[in-house]
Length: 123
Image 1: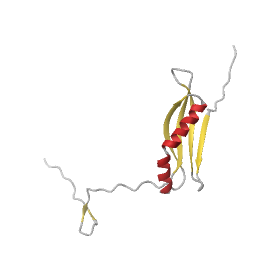
Image 2: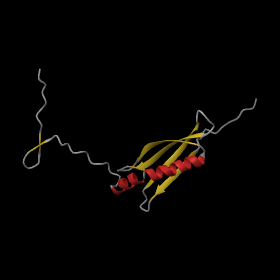
Image 3: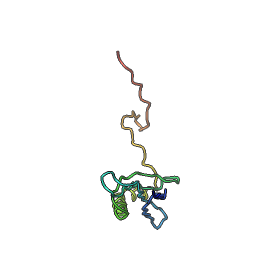
Image 4: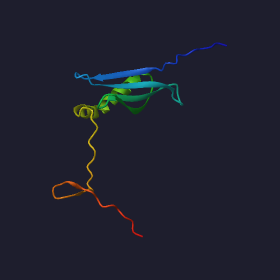
């Protein structure tokens, strides 16, 4: 009986998008094994983007099936699909969007918020 040892380190394909200001996003595809119905590899993809105040936000982006080439092509497609969001977030300084305005608030003549009357139940 022959024993075969495999590395515990997962295969990984990494794509880094860095602009001239030093902002960067990292796209990763991590091998999670073979798919159930074939011997093709299965890759979990995600994006790591900066957030306001430092730190990184990780967004899951789905699965890619195939070898390392297909994983790299899937990351390139993901890079292209998220380009508009990336540009908008970078333009806003990675700040979160402002809270939505509540249109159900009472205002006085000057536009100041007036406390709403509590809702009571009738029986």
